[in-house]
Length: 317
Ligand code: TXA
Ligand code: MG
Image (cartoon, rainbow, N blue to C red):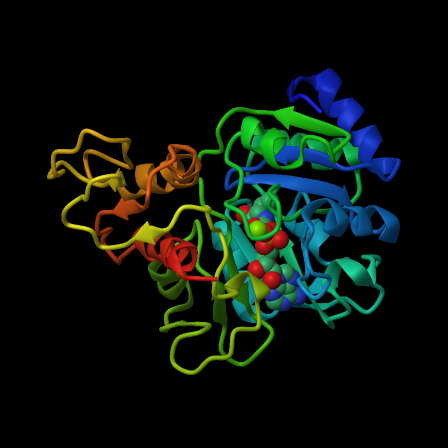
């Protein structure tokens, strides 16, 4: 499917497609999502099929408002605080499933928890309201690939597998949502993303662990060691660039290089770098370089999530 510009007509058509059990790719503020009716098990199965995604990896369910969350999951005190602070926005909360939760078990991979997000992007909001159903949506890429931040990325990865691709331009955040499990005594960040650890800690008034660190077992399959991966090898923390390499630069102190080069942010702005990251990886991956040298990125704020993605992408298979 070729992407279609998002207009009120195409959004209505997309809503009908979703209600009929079809797959629609749509923009959110983080990355493009591959959406299906979360209450329809066959539609949800089609998502796993299209992405080549293992069925043990559960999906995020998107709803238009905090009110709509209660029918699918139960908010704890910590969850309510984070929801009030960051929804709509790039935050996903893992909640206990509501007793009469209408979501297909396949969407949650049979778990008794559910990941829920209220996206802020106006086109995602319009689609959720027009469809009037909860939408299960993983990132719109082949399983294990880099997430899509433009409609063209979606077309390249999944063009022959979706009924519709709504084009709403480049996604502004560029990293997936931060996933926080609030079901336990202490909230745990399962995946770093568009909301920083510092923001979450400030809101909760306490330090918050990230799964995989401090002996916390990764319970989010998005934390699989190799993920978000281009085919070309990455060389991280590069302070120089070798012959035959492409360069993923950051900041204004860039080594001279005559080969392919993309600067994530000349001014050293981490939000700008996050927004550019996945498109840059796709472009440099296509440049036919021996490796992609990646300059050091600061490890605070959004830099923590950027480094997380780069480390997963760099890991050998
Ligand atoms: O920004 C985003 O989150 C995008 C947009 C489209 O909303 N979606 C996205 O979905 O990144 P996906 O499927 O690529 O990543 C969802 C992550 C995975 O790491 C999955 O394992 C985790 O959320 N997850 C989903 N349900 C879970 C659950 N019940 N418990 C723990 N982790 C869960
Ligand atoms: Mg994904």
